[in-house]
Length: 125
Image 1 (cartoon, rainbow, N blue to C red):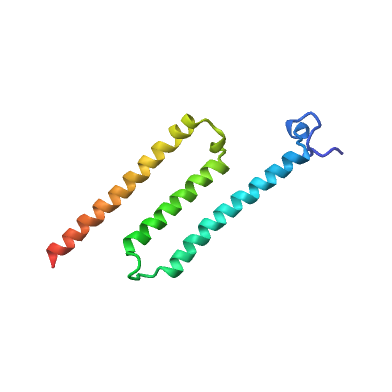
Image 2 (image 1 turned 90 degrees about the vertical axis):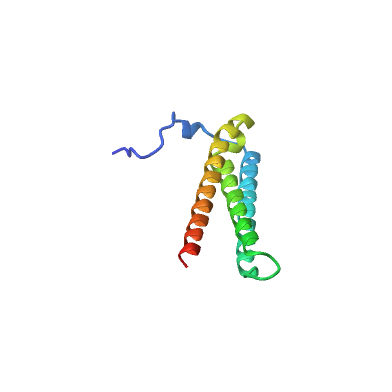
């Protein structure tokens, strides 16, 4: 009885091979991506531990730094794991600019609604 889950010899996966040098480059890239994402996450965690509503930094600056670091991590993940970094610059812009505009729009809505709610709170006191 022949198994049907084995790769057939004429399939694309059976013919896809790479040299050891290519494998070393791929593994090096994986370690680089892991290191960068780990460093950014470690920086966020250390900021969360170290910067507690102190007088050194304002609470708004701490929150904005978290937002910026999170957006940097999200952009890097999109560039690496969705292979967008390997595309042409114009294609990257066409894909990323609408998302950036949408994120800025969401931040604007959150801030404007939060401030209007705060204004209502002040008038009811």
